Image (tube, rainbow, N blue to C red; front, side, top):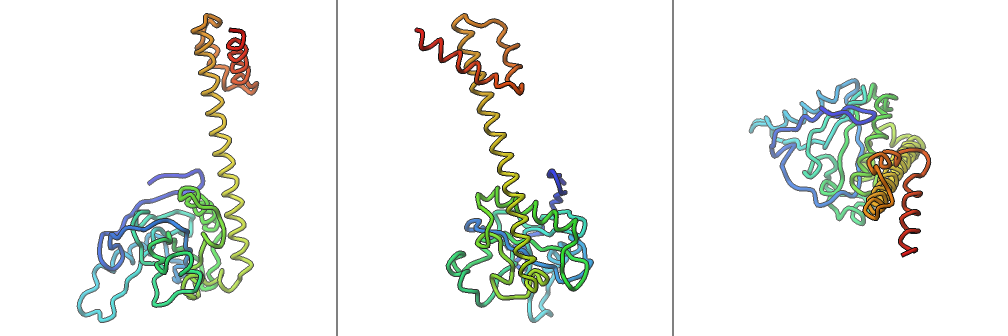
Length: 252
């Protein structure tokens, strides 16, 4: 079990089997596909166990069921991981697909879409606030990890792939779906901005440390450890030391 900044991630991988975790490898990550579990008030772990128990289908079952998702988001906002990110899950397969699928997913959505089942409290299918919060945070995190930007080409409903009424509330209420994508985009932008600032601060610190090291070697600075501690101050110490280094180099 791990914790992100906003949600709990529980790894409970399915046993490898032909019905829910075949072990086939993804061909790439082109998007995230959201589903509803279509079982009101059921838990993430309960749905995970259902997927896992599909392995027990015996010869008496004439019409075998193949189903799974990479993860399930629960009523309390927890994330239960069922299938590793680099393996195929059976969540968006069908005999036929919409035209966009052929263009964007090479007619093989399960090979390119990361599948997320989402729990819900009733048959309307609207996600609870705790669940919704995790959905937008989690999808934003996954898009960043996969190197994708949020749009309707990277955030899919099951409906967008096969025409199935899933996730029901967000199919029957297109404006709610648009809002969900907008909320994911907002969180995505916040997260990427924080990452960019963090990278900039790391670069600034590195520049300052190199300049202090140079000035020490030239005999222009004593106690480099002391001055290195100032690099994290609000005053741009890194810039001061970098400019001082450049001035010294030009005077030579």
